[in-house]
Amino acid sequence: MPEARDPWERLLEKVEEDENGCWLYQGALNESGYGRFAYHGIHGYGTDYAHRAAFHLANGWLPEGYEQTIDHLCRVHRCVNPDHLEVVSPKEQMARSPFFGLRTTCIRGHALTEDNVYLYHGHRRCRSCWREEKRETYQVNRDEMLARKRAAYWSNPEPKREYQRQYNAAKRKPRG
Ligand SMILES: [Zn+2]
Ligand SMILES: [Zn+2]
Image (cartoon, rainbow, N blue to C red; front, side, top):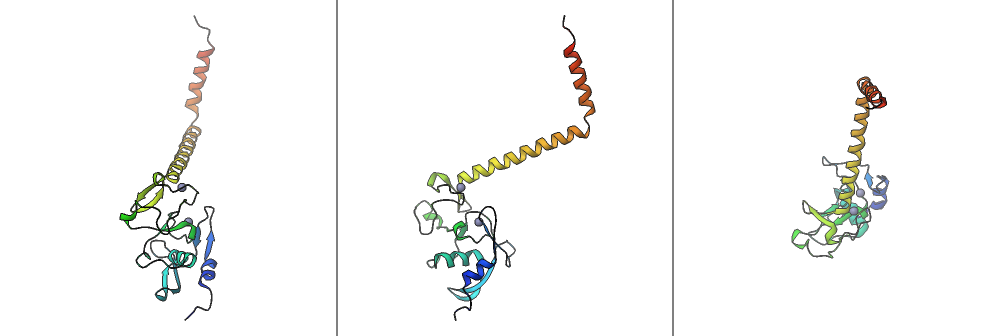
């Protein structure tokens, strides 16, 4: 029996886009943070992962045996943006590209060439993103560290001021 309303439209109503382009699912989530969505799928009406539903509704049905292997390139479990989803090939086919459903760029637009991809628990990840994230983390840690140092200084600046006074006085003394 066909649904009264287009499931794609129903899905989009439950989505809020964030600054990374992730479509954050606002409906029910399971305990792992994946969205749950009820619609008329290939096995009849039922509840499925929202991201899997999004992939199917956007790209058509996957070949038998690949329904379980949709991966988030953005690693955001509740994201249902079809551009952030791809089909993961079984491990033995990982080396072989191109493979049905594999994306050629990551969500930040880096080319997913063989040397820019590493495997994480059998899923493809972008090396450039990993590098960028590491840089961002480093920057955050560095800013935090400097803020802590500044706070520590101003919580008790007097000993350092005294040291500074002695240092300046010593510098001003004529030598010899
Ligand atoms: Zn996403
Ligand atoms: Zn990337």
